[in-house]
Image: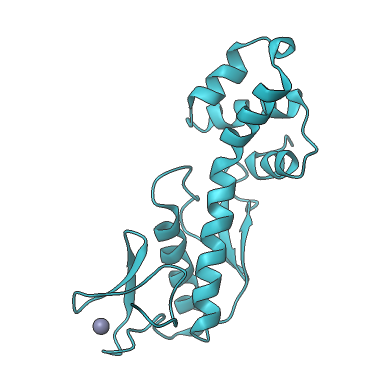
Length: 176
Ligand SMILES: [Zn+2]
């Protein structure tokens, strides 16, 4: 089996990447229809022409989705801990979809693959909410004012009564 985005991005971020690793990462992204200028540059330019500065810049661009996932997971994990929800959120590739990266909360996988762009914190909050609720049979998170379930929207937790409770990553801290 060939290495997927998660493995390759992790290698690049760990500093273990060669130009060949970056080209492999660009191929994986292209296969996933995530064609960006950095992906095209790696697939079109001869590897020998790439300077260390080019490699650094391209590594940054290709690992940006991975880093945005990690940041969003940290934000939502903060919200879980701040409100008493349990479970560990990780990135994982399930056996039944080896090309896709999903969120895993304990033994529960997200229904959809993690997106390579767009509003990643809202996606992660939504997927984690679903997992927490399926695992605990309770509504999470709750509006502190109305005791109603919140939903993730535009990077924030919103109450069905029409107000925003907190930015994702800031639940349980006093709002200003
Ligand atoms: Zn409310």
